Structure formats: C-alpha cells, structure tokens
Amino acid sequence: MKKPVSCVLCIIAGVIVGFVIAGVVYAATGFSLFKEERDKPIVSSKTGNTQLAEVALRVVGIIKDSDYQALSQIAHPEFGVVFSPYATITLSTNKCFQAEQIAVFDTDTKLYVWGVYTGSGEPIELTVADYFAHFVFDRDYTAASVIGVNQIIRSGNALENITDIFHGVRFVDFHIPGSDKDSAEDYDWSTLRLGFEEYEDNLWLTVILHSGWAE
Image 1: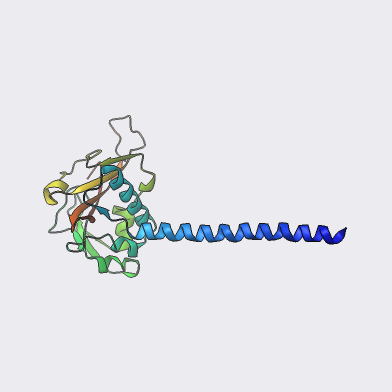
Image 2: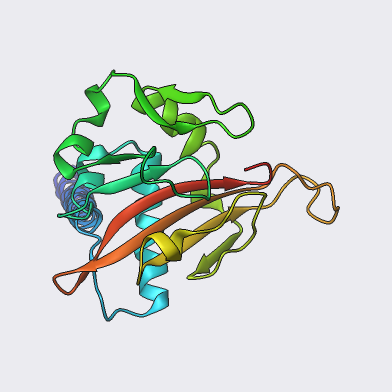
C-alpha cells in the first residue's frame, strides 16, 4: 500500500511544481510585457483623450521610479523636454534637455539653473535629483485625485501660458487638492503637468511643469 501512496504523492508534487513553474513563467512574461509597454508609451497624434491620459499616467510612474532611460525614450526627438518649475514657462531661463541627456540623469550630479524663484528672483540652482524632488515629484502624483486632459484644473498666481509657448500642445494635469480643499485658504494644492507635441504622427513629451497656489 505504501508504493501507490508514494506514487500519488509524487504525482501531486509534480502538479504543484508544474503550477509554480507556470506561474513564474507567466509572471516573468507579464513583467516583460509591462516593461515593454512602459518603455514605449508613445501614442499616435490621432489618439483620444482617454488613451492620452493613460499614457501620461505611465509617464508619471516612470518619473516616480526615476527610470530616466524610459523617460528619455519619450522625449521629443527634435526639441527635447523643457522643465518649468512654475506654471509660467520661460524658455529663456527654463532648462531643456535632449533625450541622451535625460537618459543619464541618474548619474548626473551637476548643478543647473532651472529658472528663478518667484518672489526673490534668485536662480533655482539644483542638481537633477534635487530639482525632481522639489519641482517635479514633490508629491505622489500617481495617486492624484483629479486628472484633466487639455484642461487646467487649478491656477495659482502665475500666468498659464503653456498653449502660448507650445502651439498645438496636448497636456495632462495631475492635481492634488490641498489639505483644506473646501476653504478659500486651501494653499497647499499642487499640480504636475505633462505636455505632449506631435512629431512624425506621434505625440512626444515636450514639457514637464509644476504648479501650485503661490506660483
């Protein structure tokens, strides 16, 4: 009687191992597909707003993970990406990086001037890491409660000029309300805005800006 039981146990063990192996293969394949999708979140210039919002959300995930190689692959091939610390874009002072520069952001420790601080007018001189921490991903925008496509969700004191600077731009706002959103003194809200422009029938990332009440 022991031998049949042993055989049955072997069969069960084999089935379990088979399921485990299959699960690992499936997980690995799923991860690979996710990475492939993440690395190429470019959309056709004819895509709808829903698809654009989905792509923008993947871009925010890329930013959250500091995956600058993936970010570089969606940078505008001709103009690169403009980084604006405030809603008012000033091309003469804001930094613009080409794809090959963005790809090595994780090892870039140089100090750059990204613009000037509102109020003081002092230069915003920061490393890439510090700039992203203060003026890009200062909050977790993957959890933004309000997302607007081609719609500015909320404005502060700064001039909103994205459509004046980038004609034909399509943008997505990731907005996080302040701690007292029902009050007139709701000062701590913030928005991360991603702008896309058409190039060779596709939309490419062309501007990343930050907006807040006092900006």
